[in-house]
Length: 500
Image 1 (cartoon, rainbow, N blue to C red):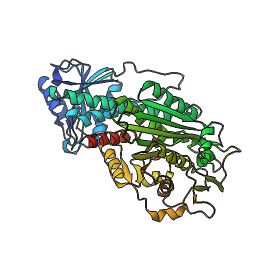
Image 2 (cartoon, helix red, strand yellow):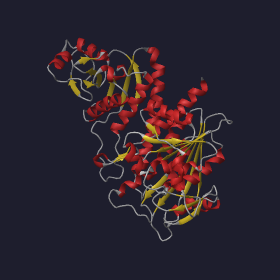
Image 3 (spheres, rainbow, N blue to C red):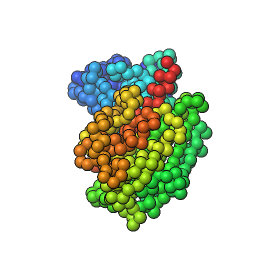
Image 4 (spheres, rainbow, N blue to C red):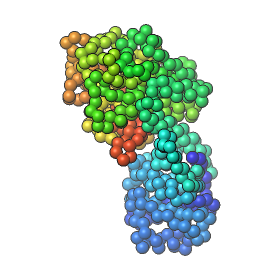
């Protein structure tokens, strides 16, 4: 999709479709009023007759509107003008894209940028529009034998700006929105692939492809022999149960000053999680291909940073394995020694994500990080606690937590802080090792983070549990691409703060 910006009046746009807003109840936006005046009151007459109330997400497509240069006019309902927030604005753009997808229109001029969103400016609206449009138009059909392309696919969106003075700001917002959206698409494509294709080796090859694409990136891949030699006994306890060899992937993006300590992103990459010996129930087990969404999110976020050539240093660390019930697989009651030297009693082999992450968190120390953020589809308990709206957030550094919450609010990719109190640590007590890998039924999301916190004491650290937000189930099953937008927004904020 091509995105661009332009200033001009809606009735003078020589294009396939012009999009304008209608608010509830039956109130025309500035662009809609201009089109109405040009057409001799056509739009206001249709609105009066009840063709469109202006309710959020409603649409009305008009053809051959008199005294306009466009082929079509699409009116989109936005709800009450003073109540448009992030969620509503994205829904408005999604409704637009969904309606136009099958309309035969190939080029669109959107005047939805004039919609007032509280405390949000033009750049934010353009970036959010691009993400919402690409989300709506996304499909994953690479593995279908018959791939039916749209008869006349949408190929160009032009966003309206109020004057020439806003063109530079708008163009920068387009560049940022497209890079983030491309990172989200990469994340979704990787996550939607089945476990027999997207293996640890496949993820390593994808990282190497990024190295060829972006000159400022450097990729390293450690195999099981390297991993074992580093003393990563927790990592090895998971991967030795699979015939697919585990990998430890690092991807370094060096866009900042050489002396600048990096942001390190650690993504859980379990390409399929059977539960191991603690076998999962069969229902919906196919969705365990999504247990590598943290890894996919790290690749997507680093890709966006590299495409934008951000003045920042970012390191992605991806521990990636399969969790399978082979004869070599770990058994409940086994005790392993992590890279940090701490011993772990494995009471449940389905709590494997924290075992590969803990060694990756220790490995992160070698990069002398400014902050470390791990991203993982870690606990079903997070889905119970927070549902499918925010990611769970915990950490050991309040300013980092605050910045991530702010980034989530600004990007619309929200997270919510849960307590990481010492009170929960005793649930991990073991009679036979330094700790157990599970903490019982209560507060499962928090005790998982408590476990990880024991390996993150040498730096500022935050943990994002994305189990509830990384993919959708049911008829619309598929990866969401979260939290790429959140992570990139956090890095953009850091850059802005350093400049001020």
